[in-house]
Every structure is written in C-alpha cells, then in structure tokens.
Length: 109
Image 1: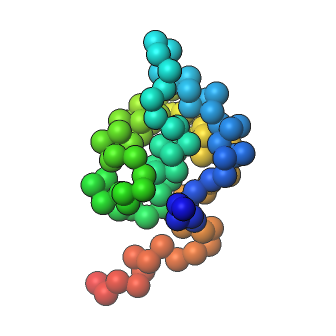
Image 2: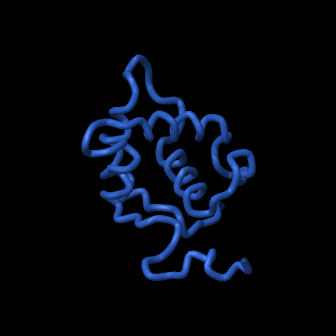
C-alpha cells in the first residue's frame, strides 16, 4: 500500500494531463515508466523541497525522475514548459497555500 502525499494528484486528474506530458518524447518505443508516478514524485519534490537523492523509496529512482523533470521543464514558448502547463491545468499553486506565511519572516536576522 502506497503512502498518500498531499502533493499528489489523482489518477483521474493525471489522465487529463497524459496527452500533454506524453508529447515531450519521441515515440520510438512504449514508455517503460509510469508517467503518473513521475509526476507524483516531481510534485512531492516541488512541495517538500527535499534533495533529489532524498526522494522516498516508493517513488521511481531519483535520476529517472530528474530526467523527466528536466525534459518537462524545457521552455516551450509563451505557454511555458510542459510542467508549467500541467500544473496550471491541475490548479496546483505551489508549495505554500495561498496567503500562508512562507516561513522566512520568522527567522532571526
């Protein structure tokens, strides 16, 4: 049984994004990885701010996740990267809830 992270999206939400994200690679052979798991891992990293190598073991290997992140983050004109487009479609608004303090104002200077 997998842990459910607050950064995750549902399979149904992902299926709406699948055509967009699949468009990033040339179709020479079937995808060997689960793109849903790749996106879940990327969202976890974006939300938690953890280091790539500290990605929990239930996600795919960090190097594979990083390669998809790099590919999906490439600029693609005015609409932004594929990852930005996907995040906009899901309504994901970043690692902090809107209006929440970001934390840096609590540090002593």
